[in-house]
Structures are given as C-alpha cells and as structure tokens.
Image (cartoon, rainbow, N blue to C red; front, side, top):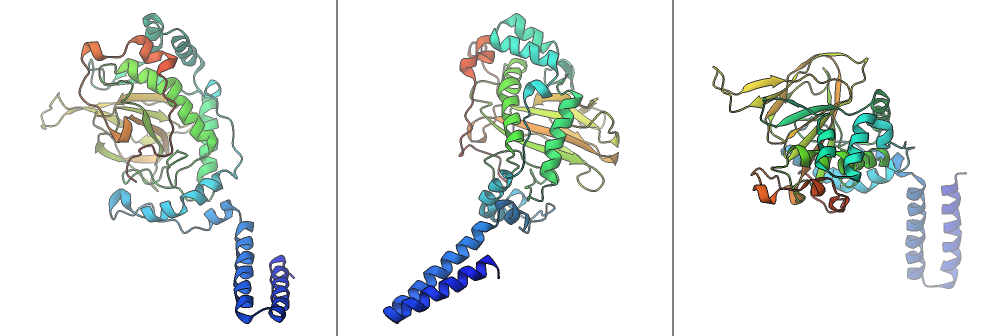
Length: 359
C-alpha cells in the first residue's frame, strides 16, 4: 500500500472515531480539513523541477500580440520555474576563469587606479569597426576558449533541463533570457552571477569610456541579457533593427572548431547613402570569443545562415524604467575618468522590481 493511501486510511479512521463523539456537521468539516491536508502533502512531495518539466510550454513561434503572447503562463508559473533552477547543480563562472587574461589585467588596473593612462591601456584592446571614424562600435577578444566551453556547458545544461524557457523576443525565438527576476528566464546562479559580474566589472566602465558623450551613471543602470541561436531549424536571420539600449554587448559563443556558413553581421551607416538610396552596410569579422560593443541606436542585422549553427550572448544596458538616452551630454556634464572607473560609482542594484523590456 502506498504512503498516500496509508495516510488516507488513517484519516478515515480518525474521522470515524470523531463522528461517534461529535455532531455530524463537525465531523464533515474535519473530513474536508484532513483530506485537504493529505492533498497538500502529496503536492509537496513533487519537486519544483518535476512540476516545471510537466508544464505545457507555449510555442516559441507564437506571434499573436507579439511579446505579450502567453504572458499569463509565465506569470502564473514563474515561481515554480525559479524554484526548479535551484535544484540543478551549478558551476562557478568567475571572470578570471572566463575572460582573456591580458584584457582583464588592464581592466583591473584601471579600476584600481582610474587614470587616463590606464583607461587608454584598456581601450587599446578595442578596435573600431562598423562605420569608420564615427565611434559607434568596437571589437575585442573577450573570452578564452576554456571560458567559452564553460559558458556553453552551463547554457547546454539550461537548454536540456526540460524546464520551460521563455523566448527573448519575437525576433529571437529560440534563445533564452538570463535573469533571476524575469518570469520564465534562466535563473541558474552560475549564469546570472556571471552576467552581473561581467556588467559591473567590464561592460559599464568600458561602455562609459568608449561612449562617454552619451552614457552617464543613470543611463546604464539596468540590463537585459539573452542568448541567440541561429540555425536552419530555428532562427535563421535577424532583420535590420535598433536595440532598446544605450550600449549593446554581443559576444560570440561559438567554439573555435564550430564552423558555419552565412549569418554575416553588418552595421549600417545611415549617413553614407548608396546608389540604392539606403545606408552603407559594414560587415564584421566575428571570431569565437570576440566581443562587439556598440551604441544601441546603430541599425544592424544578421543575414540568413546557410549551414551550421551560431550562438551569441547579448546584453543590453539602459536606464531606469527602460529609458534609452540618445542626446549627447555637454562637455562639462560628461563623466570624469574617476567616475567612469571609480568604485564609488559602481551600480550593484539588482532589485526585484527593476524594469525589463516588455515580454
């Protein structure tokens, strides 16, 4: 006999004894109470991971109402999904084990001693790309091969977990959101902590240094991190668009041995009008482990992939409540080098009620 059946039999025996010594109405109320108690006990015996895996997840390809599609499902099951992630084993993804050591060393020197010379040493690792001479986009080597493998291992753990994954947006249906607060996001602490460390330690100070004329301390307080997967079975391309960010980080998570054809990324120079009446496309070389950091306002796109697979980690930085600054600051209002790198200016605010793009 199962434990639940034994508990039920015991419940009936208690109720039967109660009926003898009390009014029938009181006995019936006791029956309802005890049966409810047994039902709750059975529900508690099922782990959050099991409950999450049994959910009937909405189709990622749904398009009705755009990002509001099935919002009620994610809100209703958000707590269960967050609890499920806690039941998985999680690695430690420290920046020192993931990021290119020479870049990390120069960044740490600038943070410890924020001078123009140390900042320039960091920026020397970033090469301008996209529209030339306009300071809109830069690339650098960010991840080591071992770092890529460690990140991919945690992401593979998430995508193969059986836990429902909420799509980042209607243009990117087969990636996942990385955030401990968003309903339906991957909230593995290994990944959320890595993203937050990457933002606090690298993305904010470097973004402020590269785009000092448009980024202040209130303009990059919040973030939205998600992955993209391009392949023939899922998302094949990304239409031309701007990001809802003041600064965007795009990190190539492909391993060195993983090749693909097509999927070329370009940034658009809207001021350099070609013979067809549109802007000029500037295509980028995007090696495994490379970082592309650019102004969110720059129009960009990814052409269709023809073979293989490509994976990227995307991080948007923006202001409180989703505000995206476009207008430049006056010279006197721009951040000093101490403010760009100084520890007193770090923003570690990860409140539960922070704004996220509408999903």
